[in-house]
View 1 (cartoon, one colour):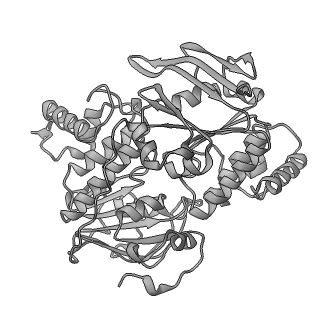
View 2: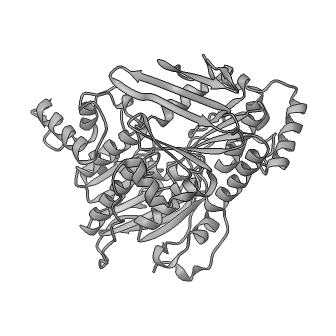
View 3: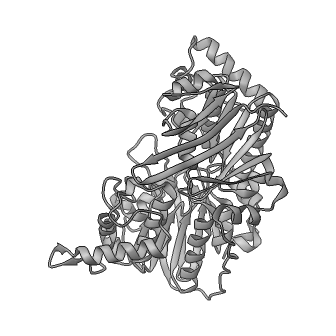
Length: 507
C-alpha cells in the first residue's frame, strides 16, 4: 500500500458558531485525481483553504510526505509543492502572460517565456506568453493559471470548479491534460458539482456533509444519481418537464442593438436581436467574456444607451431604452445578476436589509419608513422556501457560502412575482440539490406564464431549462435554436466561433 502524499486527521475549523469543518480525515494518494464532493456549505472551500495555507485549522494534524505540515500562507504551501487554481481567476488583465507568471515564479523573462512554451507543448496548454491577459479567452486564462501552478513544481494541484467556464470541446482537452499530469506524478484535488465529470476523471471521491466526512467511494462504481444522493442525504427529484404552451405576448424584445461600452476592455455588442414571450425560457450560451456582462447591463438598465439606440429595447410592449433600473423593475422586471456580492447583495448588510434592496415594494415600507417586522417575515419566508443555510435573517450576506447566497438572491427576485425574470448564471457554484430545486422552480414559473431569460455557461442547465438557445460570441448573437432539435456539440461549435446549419433556427 503506497503511503499517502497528504494525510489530514481530525481537522476542524470554526467561524464563531459556524463549524465549517469537524474532525476531517482525508488521504490523498500519489498520482491520483481525488474529488471532494458536497453541498454548498458542506465545508469544501474551507478545507481547501486549510490545505493551501489561506486559513489555519483550530484542531487536528496534517502530514505531508510523511512529515508534519503546518502552513501559515499560500507562499509556504507553494514552496512545499501545493498549488491551487481558484474558481475566480487571479490574473492582472493589463499584464502579459509572462508578466503575470513573474509575480509568482522567479526568473528572467526570456527564460520564463521559453518555459511557458515548453509546458504548453508538453501538456496541451498552449498559450502565447507575450499576449496581454485581456486578449485571451477564458479557456486560455485557465491554461495560464495552471501553467503558473506547474512552474512552481507542485506535487499536489487543487482545482476549484475548473470546467465551469469551458465549452464541451475545451473540457475534453482539460481532462487530457489532467490525466497527463497525474501520470507524470502530480496528485490532483478536484472540486466540481458536475457529477458526470467526477465519474469521468476521478479515481476516488471524499463526500462532505455538514462539515464532516460521510463517505469515501470510487466514483466510477456509482452513477451520478447515487453520488447526488450521497451528497445531499436524500433522494433526488426527477427533472420537471416544461409544459407545451402556445406563444404568449412578448415580454422582452431587443431589435438590432449596437453598443460600444466606455470601458476599453469591454466587448462591443453588434446587431443584438432577441425576444422572450410569456411562458417561454430563452437561454443565452457562450464562453465567459464574449459580451454577457455588457448585454446584462443593457437589459437591466444599469448601462446607458446612446440616444440613437434608445428605441431598441422593449419590455411588456413598451420602449424602455430611456428608463433606468428602478423604472424597469416598476414595469414588472426582476433581475438576478452574475455578481452575487456587490451587485446582487451587499456583503456587510444583513439578509433582512438585503431583502429591502429590491423587495421594498412588497409592503416593506410604510409612510417612508421600513417595516422591520414585514421585512423580517419576508426574509424568513425566502430562507424557508429556498432552503438557505444560515443562522437567521440577521446574518450578514457575506457570511453565507456562495451557493446559499445565490439561493437567497434568486428567491428574493422570484418572490416579486415579476412578468419578466432575467437570471444570469442561476446555479453558478450551487450544489446539485439546490441547483435542481432552482431549475424546477424556474420551469414552474415558465409553465405558469412567466417570461424568463437565462444567461448560463452550463450547457446542461440550458438544455434542461430552455425552449430555445442563442449563443453569444464576440458580441454577436446566433439565431435562436430550438433545444429539442439541437445537440450540445452544435452549441459548442457556435461558442467556438464556428457556424452551424441554419435549418434548426426557431421561426
